Length: 72
Image (tube, rainbow, N blue to C red):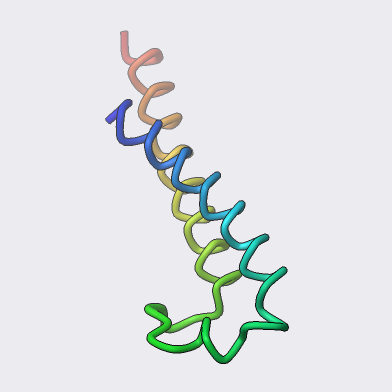
């Protein structure tokens, strides 16, 4: 699970950087960027959802870690 959390964090960071570039280019290239767009939400919502999912997983893992400490 540790490796997954590491990769999830890296993916979230990459998505944030990508969304900044997307926003920068969107005004000038929106027609092209919209073609075959793979998500059902705007890109910033995709990033936000990814970050919420990451936070949920991190919180769950922290609760599990704390629970193991108190059960010893």
